Image 1 (cartoon, one colour):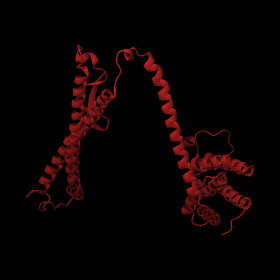
Image 2 (cartoon, helix red, strand yellow):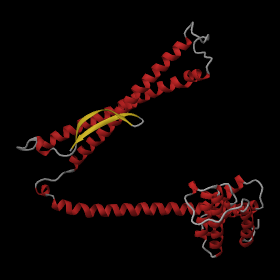
Image 3 (cartoon, rainbow, N blue to C red):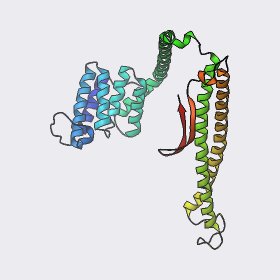
Image 4 (cartoon, rainbow, N blue to C red):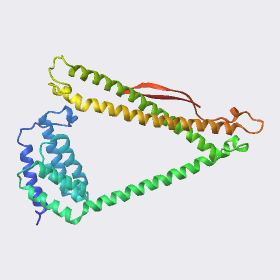
Length: 323
């Protein structure tokens, strides 16, 4: 399918958009305020100015600048003029952003049923699909992201090496003792235990809340389905659709949530407590050296408190660490 030359298409789109923008008499204005504080007439005037600037930039082979102005005009000032999507797509395709171009053309075809620019949008979409430029662009972006992540990892590793060396030399404790791998593992167990215990405690608190909700709903449903109540229906039959939904979904959901939270919270709390106990045992073994009190070698964070806490939006668990 042949495509209309860009210069011809630009002139036709310019005429169409200018006709749309000029439909309302617009006053001349100076520098425009924020779009939220502008009137409809001011927004149309600003969209018209941006469109003219974008067309000039596109004619001067400044496609990136034109793309930014087309997007600003459409998104901020004239979102009802969907013909802007064709201009956005052409500018995006010119700068090589096939992903943005494809989305713009598809958006135009979805929002505008009848317009002479539909053929051009369809032709450009077909060209994008045949060239597979979207897939190639996605692959390039994926590779660039992987390379950036690898570079950050290398930089972090080098920074860590440069940071650790002077700290180790300046630390007077290194002349007498050096933390070994088992010690670091013990501290890791302690921190993991605190986290798991906190999460497990929060889950158990949530389970208690869910159980209370389930019991409340069960009592409410029992009252509504008891003989002699005002509904006049047998058990588990309700005249109120909202009550029926409570029976069919609300109560089972609350019961399921309470069971799941009890099981999950119990498992997490048990694992967390086990890790904390292992940490305590490791700390004791670390301090049992010749002629030295165990407390003399105890360093790092210690768990001094654990309990429920009120947080924004619900309940949780709080752990107090002492360093």
